View 1: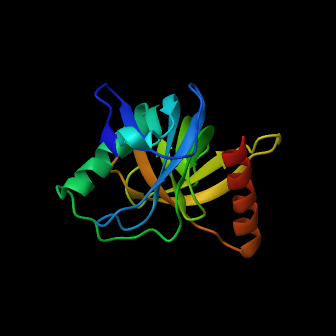
View 2 (view 1 turned 60 degrees about the vertical axis):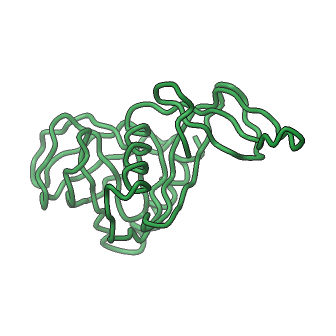
Length: 189
């Protein structure tokens, strides 16, 4: 990955063509990164390979908001400025979905968003961040559904300036299966 010389732009090398304005998912992994990371971006321009000119197929993508912060994070890891050791059990998938959340045992709820999710947890973007160790209930309405799925989670980190990292607390296998289905529907929308 390298910057394409303009703000929030990323030059990628791929033979998978994309159209300007098309949403794409980038899966990246490199030494120093404990696991794969998924990034959501919008296609800006793509060009085919030109072997005689030694030009590889690829193009330029644009990232905004929390997705751009992920790229900055990856650049820090890739340059060695940031050392990581912990590895997530599940790859987080980029989504952007509005949710409601409340503290365990409290009825006051807040509107927020999830910008990445997996079976194990999510990144909750909220202006009223709960503290590390606090238990919260996140209400996710799957696409095509009217009823919210309530998921109990524990705040594991507050390192992100836009929100908090959550670890989902699956109480039974039925909860894990429902969560997998919700994630599938969110990613496919």
